[in-house]
Image 1: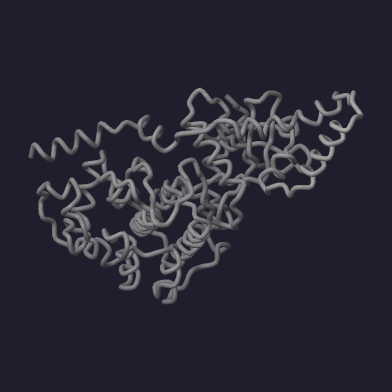
Image 2 (image 1 turned 90 degrees about the horizontal axis):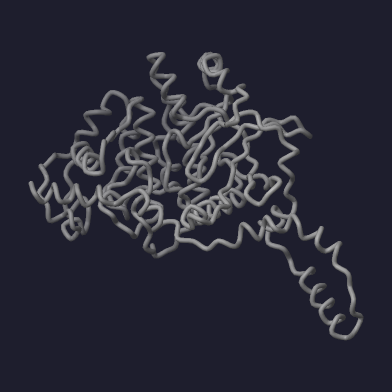
Amino acid sequence: MNSVNNTSNGIQELSRHESAQDVLRTTKSDLKDAVKLKYKNVLRKKTKRSHRDKNCSTRQAKHVAVATTPVPPSRHVYQSRRSLEEFELLNKIAEGAYGAVFRAQDEKTKEIVALKQITTDNKDEGLFKAAKRELKTLLKIRHPNIIAGRELVVGTNMEEVFVVMDYVPRDLRNYIDSMTKNKQLVSPGHVKCLMVQLLDAVQHLHKNWILHRDLKPSNILLSYEGVLKVADFGLARKYELPPRQYTPGVVTLWYRAPELLLFANEYSTHIDMWSIGCIFAELITLQPLFPGSSECDQLFRIFEGLGTPTDTTWPGYSELPVGKITFKNHPTGRLRETMSNRLSDEGLSLLQDFLLYDQAARVTADAALNHPYFEEEPVAMEPAMFLPSLWAEYVEQNSNSDTGEDTQ
């Protein structure tokens, strides 16, 4: 019992600040350099050439050579940025660790967009590195089921840098809560529609060597037309094969893979797939699958729901620090009991594949999309078939927050 308590204390001693510093160790010049480009043209106009000698000609030739060098795509975005004055800020819609998000209107096109402020304060180098990493991801990724950055917007000073994104006012958390309030279950066709879109998005991320590392219902946006878009790349990062060491303190607790709870610092795409499995189960039951109150409680709930791991179900488990601790022996099969009347056999098979302890055997996004579950009847519904009456009720209830003028 003392060993369990010691493990609990050890887990709790990993503070959020320490995790952030491990993940977000930084350099601090790139983003400020990008913002400074706004002022370079003005400075160039003020520069007077006072020398016409050979050395000056040589320097000029070098400038020409640099100018003809292909500019990376991200630099093109930086150079085409617009002024914040071209947008009307309507209201703040979110406040995160790396900057606020505003609902705004493009004065030129009258389109409603989201402006995400990017941290440029280098006093906290960890947060600055995270903000820069998120910006690079937003500007690089292009997929219909991923919220991408369109362009940069710069204010009157170097601290005001925003990335323009599509504005989608609802998320999967809202959808699940609305269904719960109306005492309705999500139909199999709707579940498959959402899961296919989510898997498509994550497949695209993984093919581009990007881990999201914080998949959860509130980070998955959903339009009135039923189009799903993965958002919030504050914890996303590039990954490598073989896996390198990363910080384990990522992913919101309820959707965190067991290897992260045991402080594994070598991981890959498998952690995103575990999160998708938890989201899949939540769409079926409208309740979080493992709603732990702490890291230890989360681990106990997983063991209780899936069975206590062994070296057979989790190769190398006994070699982990926690493997030396004796946990209550929970049998497997409880997940089947929980889902017996809510999922087909193929659906249960897919859910179990998402939630395997063995990372090497855990299903990939590619394999999940080709699972027989998506081929059996009823097939995935078209996004446009989502319940319009449900969305209409949600809009009426939340009209004040969408049209508010508070920007504080």
